[in-house]
Image 1 (cartoon, rainbow over the protein chains, first blue to last red):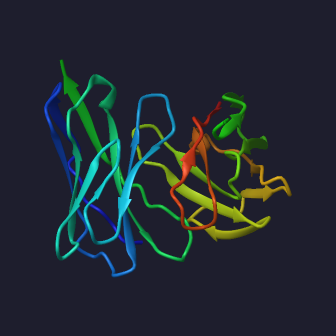
Image 2: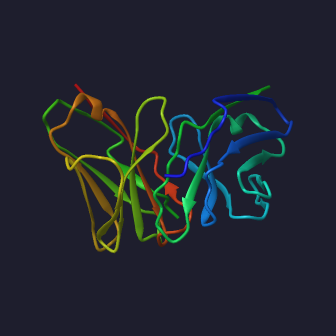
Length: 111
Length: 112
């Protein structure tokens, strides 16, 4: 399984942008980059995914390095509700949905 | 539109017993995956069901088995329970094999 490396924890002030990094130096050309987050006492929640180009949705933006060996999840204005564990996951295209989650980054949002 | 629902929410068993956990996928979804999440860890993939067949399997022993029904719902069965099986068991569904997954809130299994 292709692996990702994330910082164990990060802090952000409320209403400020947050940049969550992920390294995936062994990524292959057919691996999609997925981000999920898990709030306390809940199952993981899909945030965003991409292959090569940067992606935006209502929740966040995903910036993918040109060599695809790293990516950054951007929360434009952190709220207290964004406090969660964020997982960066690689998933090969057309081989099913087997996800390797790793331990993720625990984000603390400071009021 | 109901999301992924799992039952029961909590369960207590003793070593050696057997347990069945249930999952109803989100409406319109046909693929179900199961994960085990130990305390403080990320979810670990157990297996995935599509068209009523196990399509992929993670590194879990044969004590873990599953089933998918024609209505796409699924069951996870664990035999000969061990203390180490205590965890949160998550079900995720998607449409097809390659779309983002939607997770339920899990079943908390405690083994005494």
